[in-house]
Image 1 (tube, rainbow, N blue to C red):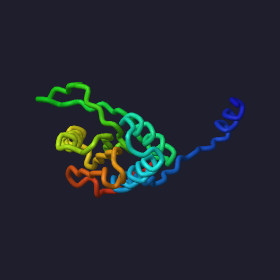
Image 2 (image 1 turned 180 degrees about the vertical axis):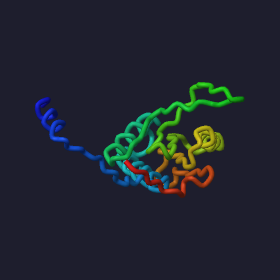
Image 3 (image 1 turned 45 degrees about the vertical axis):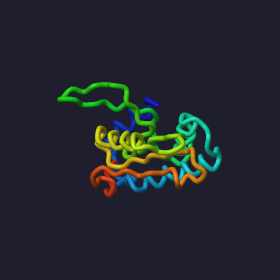
Length: 159
């Protein structure tokens, strides 16, 4: 193989790297993908399991769909300019754009809503989904939260 590289180097061949526009999913598109995946998980498992089971299955479903998602992402608090690792964790961060908080409770309470709003503010993200899997119809367990207007922007970058 080194002989091949030496031949190419001696030939004076100059390679090039092409730039191709890569479309990053907008927050809207990511949100839609998460809800679609959550519907599949809920259809398969139903209600009554622990949050950790739904999180693992939703993460798996997103990966199968080619969507990047990270579980239990740390979220520091910045207080008076000091970054404090207090132990807050976002259940899922999808495509580095949408925060997903998973619940399996009888009803979403104001504290659950305050949690995702705080996570949006602390992370600087603009779109969050609060999904309660402990419902008969999942559409009744999904709440969408917006922080600012960044959720509207589709992003394109060159690679």
